[in-house]
Amino acid sequence: MELLTSNIRRTHCPGAVGGPVPQVPRHRSLRGLKDADAVHDFLYPSLQQLHDPFLLKDMDKAVARLNRALGAKEKIMVYGDYDVDGTTAVALVYKYLQNIYSDLVYYIPTRDDDGYGISLQSIDYAESIGVSLIIVLDCGIKAIDEIAYAKEKGIDFIVCDHHVPDDVLPDAAAILNPKQDDDHYPYKGLSGCGVGFKFMQAFSKSNGLGTMYNLEAMLDLVAVSIAADIVPLTGENRVMMFYGLRRLNNNPNVGLRSIIRTCGLSRHELTINDIIFKIGPRINASGRMESGQESVELLVSRNMQSAMEISKRIDQYNNNRKELDSQVTVEANEIIESHAQVLDGKKPIVIYDRNWHKGVIGIVAARLAELYFRPSVVLTYYADGIATGSSRSVRGFDVYSAIKSCRDLLETFGGHTNAVGLSIKEENIPEFRRRLTAYVENHIHDEQVTPAMDIDCEISFSDINGSLLRYLRMLNPYGPGNSKPMFMTRKVYDVGTSKVVGKKMEHIKLDLRDEEGNTVTNAIAFGMAEFNDALKAGKPIDICYTIEETRHRMTSSVQLMVKAIKLHDDAEPLHTNS
Image (cartoon, rainbow, N blue to C red; front, top):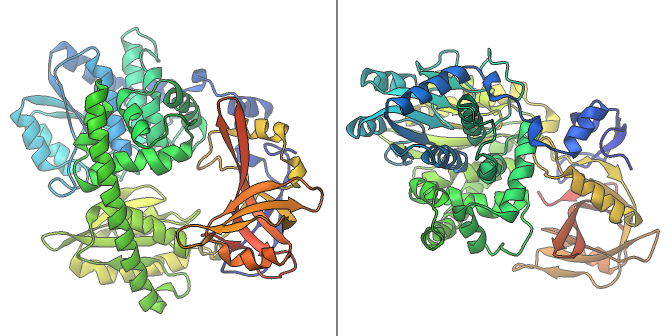
């Protein structure tokens, strides 16, 4: 069973929307691996595969400015965005420099007082405490006016960002961003924390310490940023995630260890899903609900007792955040369902409510995009007639370009192809909705607004053996650009012990066999309880699924995570849990 490099059969499995299930032969090299060397590097990640950090444009300038600041004993501020990527980046650079230099402070803007990115008041604060160099991480690439204002006050900036730049760049001492048009760095997918990591690599190398001096111990922070910011898990990111996960499982930093304990994950082998669904949201919750400064305080902590106290507070912020985003999601769905025309054709979703909490609109936008299969923009009131918002996209559609086409209506915007933050005058929202809709309808493809599932291989349950599991482990870690293999098995039966579970009895815990044998295979199908009656009646089903392996000490167990179901003899498309 070749999952890496052979020609495969790729099956589209549309969900609740769309026609019959087509099976489309595609001749491609899966995961973009074109030769034996690429396959070897993919299966056996090594820190030697990381690129020379001086290949980044302006890296020599950035290192020279930092070295000059240290030599002149300047006061340095490490500044970053309030999300997971920004706070991990600040923690990494601050911790690394703190080992060799003491005149350092860090600063995380607040959503309410500073807004996104660099604020004028943060520059005033930096001036008041004698800062002459600011290293800004995960933001700053569009802060032209703010950095000019700082320069007038004698404050230099080193910008470490990974968001898409504009044609005009700020007048900084150095700009590190692999997405610059004239930057020939070999890998473009770094997170903001990843750019900070490369900066510290170059600084270490320039001072004769080697490119990994004291840095492997900080890859747990980089791994958290990569997972939480949903950047591609390819190239350098795959290498750093591989070693970062190893660090998280064996010897994480004190702050991350306290979060792991708070999540109840201390005795588990941590995976990227644990970062995405448990660790990342807690770090994010501080910036969403209170202040991201507290997240950095946690991540740079060296005392377990104080770290646990912060973790417990952050855990409560996360609980409050979950209640808020559930409420806003319900209200957003009510708006959409009461205005059926919102979903006509290939329209994007653009909704606004003055009362929604700024800290959860990004989460809600992501949920709407996933639920309705179309780009989604969620807006709420900020101040002085200005609304702030977040957008999320669907597979393969560049929402950044879509938002950029309306830039004359916007106060600010910035982000990636899949996610953009923006601010806009309330009076411009109707025209923004009209123009964005026209752009999306002219540029998006039908398959991008149709639920779809890529099948790597059709197998029988007997193929799920030790050999396959070992192979799947080698493909880890999974994420964007390296998705978990999706399998399909036809004509599967309930052995009689499957049952409906969940608070609302909406899920099915399955015990299944296929036509080839009597081996019972366990599975879970979230949100698919409607198939329980058919299963109990002995009807066969076809399923799409991923294979989940739980390893604890010397034992392991396997469960299928069912992503789509249809009755075997039914011509209707597979029902997904989307």
